[in-house]
Image (tube, rainbow, N blue to C red):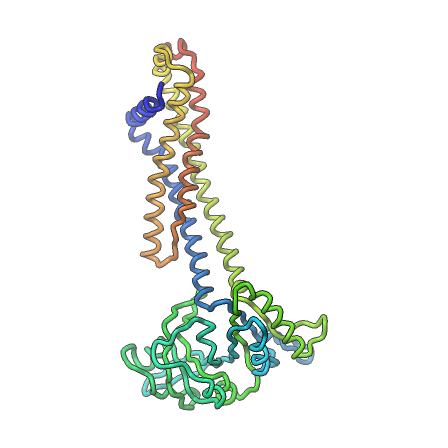
Length: 405
């Protein structure tokens, strides 16, 4: 008997019990759809993290102040005042450094006319937009002369512009008062949106770090140095060179802890990526249980089908059907059920992913690999769980089968 004829017989048998066939497929549909949806959510989350890394800057290394201990009391990370503008200047001279920008932050109430807004005043250097791959939407970034003279100029984000001036107003040349000191707006940053932790990157005001040091905070130290490596392959080696340089400059003895931190973007994102991958694997495993349950359901239905069709099997054997023909018929029925359920499940999973993305704004990304694996797994489930019922049908004694009522 040809495989084409076996398929025709299998399809006719499934068509005779449409409701039972549909309910049998339901478990496979739910399982495949769940796998597709969960993997799409996990893949979307990983893609979002990678996009955030790209948004944060190319080959970026973050040097921050570390722990400060006074009188035996450890103040914790970020409290040391040993990082200086000279450190930033020496870091910029290291081989492999493409850009470097000293930084220091403060918060303050910003006032323009009768409007005010509390936001982060971030002191930085002229290389900052190059490190962060951040374009200027209006006006210009401040210059090296502004940094050298601690000029009172500011480049604002779109959120600050909208709150103080309005979205349709050109703020270039306007004056903002920060801590009762006048600052001239020289530029507006292009919108970047939120980070993965919900921080709005557009809610910021950038100004020369020397201005923040001398005129807003009255200190002689900086809080961080943002560095961009010349190539991605040099990031780790450059981070090690920065560490060695600062240990020498800060006179840190061998065995003593650093009073600074050197972190790469990949290091800062690795924990989140690992957590996302673990969660994706967990969710996919839970969804995979649905596929297993669906396979067991198919096996049960096929066993019931063998019992109901015992007389049919006996007639077919009496007419010359071989054990292999009977085996193939029931095996094909199980595989067709799973493949059809898998196809519908892929469509449902794709639709569910699109709904989550459009309705809730969740990041989802359909993976062709996940679709292929889910579909192939569905076929394998039909093959595996269809073997026992098929073998049971094939081993029936034709005389006993014909006597069955």
